[in-house]
Image (cartoon, rainbow, N blue to C red; front, side):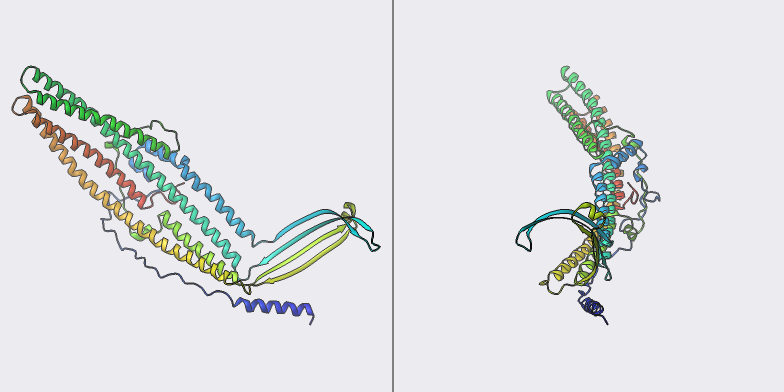
Length: 464
């Protein structure tokens, strides 16, 4: 048996012996997550409808559709999230390259002066060229685990981009619905201002003929000024909402196109299904789940750092005193070899790194459970909001009808001299408050559908 063969056997035996130094598997922490069997709120909110990718189209407004499409194409945060995917694709290639052979080429001239055998200086010129190749075997799967972790990281970033897209679409829809609500309130305020102006003119005429006192005239003027102040307040809010929408869609500040009015926007029907279905639909849950898988793969790679690495190297080159000789009759040099590198003593560094990876994996598990619980809570809140706001809206609309009737009666009584202006003034305030409340609740009710779509993961996957 040759000496080289005996050395090879010894190296292989040492590698197998050191393979027993692998750090024991750190188990995942026990899960405390409980998936509810059903939602607390009624399952059916409106007619049965699936959560679709382009869910915002259910509102029936082409202008809203265009704004969401523009936001998904030009929003800065979404473009950043998608650009980040290129980085994580490159990380996969970096990790995978460690599993492939590497080849390098080196060449260079050198000129030196040394003392010759007779004690006299001797100058020489040498040109060398060398091609080196190396390959690391992966019998324990460490390099494969690192590549797998990179793939899971990329998948998590894909889900993160989907989550940003869902958030951008929902924020754009909510912003547009809020804008249409403000538009409706502004139209109501201007219409009410005209009514207050007529009441002020009537109060002035009655004061001039001595039919009423200055108190009633002052009350009418105060109410007119109070209503007039609401108009610029709403105009300012509309400008701010338009600018916020433009930022979402990646446009410069300016006016925003309008489509259907607030009363014409139809609420979409939603059938949320079972809580367990949410786990397959929300992108933030998918991101957290893939984060756990990436942490598991990283932990496996960290554990395998304790195992020997097996590396094969080869090189071939030439040596000559000038370039023609190097390309022709130069001296040919070559070498082939292998190495087994195993950690023996590192003061616990590798074990500590594995413990760090285990801690990161555990934190990823805890984060996943928190994301799922938050998803359940957001869906419950969304279902409750849609239901309760609809009930509030029904009561508010009934109140609006009642206050409108009160105002009609009070106005007739005042015009015919059966009551003071204070009675009509109180009726005007209540009617305006009731009208405004209806508009605000309707906008909030429509926006609650958007929040519910967001909670249900509407529009994912494939939203971008």
